[in-house]
Amino acid sequence: MRQPTSIPRFVSVIALLLGCYDLVRGFMHTILLKYSATNIAVLDLTTSTARDQLQLLGAFGIANLETGIAMILVALFARPIALAMLGAIPVVYLIGYYAIKFNSESAPPSNANWGGAPPLVVYLAISLATFLAALIVMRSSRRHDITT
Image (cartoon, rainbow, N blue to C red; front, side, top):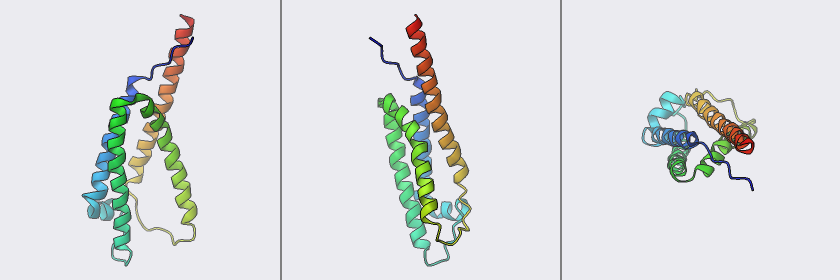
C-alpha cells in the first residue's frame, strides 16, 4: 500500500507569509482607503462615482482581511488545504481578470494607475511557484520512497 506523500513545510510558511501580506493589502484598502485610492490606484475621486469607487475598493480590502486571516489559519492548521489554496489563487485571479475585462469592454478606458497590480502579480507568481515546487518535491519524495 502506498504511503501518503507528505506536503513540504515550506507550503505552510509561504501560505502564512501570503496571509500576512493579504492583511497589509486589506489594511491599505480599508483603513488607508482614501490614500490608497488617490496615491496607489490613482483614482479620480472628483467625479460623481467617487463614493462608489471607494466603496468597491474598501469592499476589496475587507475581502483581503478575510482571506489573510483564512490563509494564516490554513497555514497553521491545514497544510493540504494551504497547498490547494496556493494552486487555486492564481486560477481564481485569472478567471476574475478575464471576467472583468469581458464585462468592462463597453465602458470607457480607465485612467487609473492601479499601482497595486505589480505587487499582486508577484503575489500570484509566488503562489503558483510554491504550488508547483511542492508538487515537484512531493513527486520526487514519492519516487524516492518507492525505490527504497
